[in-house]
Image (cartoon, rainbow, N blue to C red; front, side):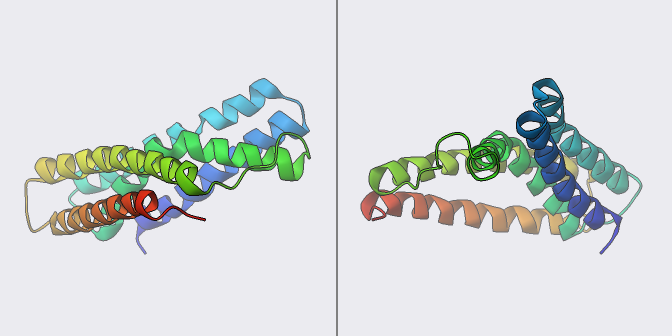
Length: 176
C-alpha cells in the first residue's frame, strides 16, 4: 500500500479517535466545549486527506484505486459524518454512561423511511465524491493516468443504483 493508502487508513482511525475523545470529554469528563471541539475536528481530517491526495496527483503520480477511494471516503465522511457522530453519541450515552434512552431498533415503514434517508445521504456522498473524482480527471487531463478514478466512479454508480433498489425493497417488503 502506498502513502495515500496509509493516509486513508490513518484518516479513518483519526476520525473515530476524535469522535471517541470528544464523547469521553463530553460525557465522562464533563467538558462539553472540549468535547465539541474534538467532534468538530472530523472535517479537518477530511480536508487533510483531500490536500494530500491532490498534491500526490499534482506531482505526477498515476491515479490508483487508492486515490479514488480517498474521494469516496471524503464524500461519505461529509455526507454521513453528522449521522455517524449522532449514532456513536446515542450508543455512548446509553452503553457507556448509562444515561439517555436505549437506541431503538426500527422496523416496518419506520425502517424503510430511515433507510431511504440514508440512501439520500448516499446520493449526497456520491455527488461530492464524484465531483472530486471528475475534478481530478479533468485537472490531470490524461486518460491513462486517470483510468482508475473513472473505474471506481463507474462501480460506485452501480452501487448507488443497487442501494436505490434496496431502499425501494424496504417499502415493498417492510422489515418485520
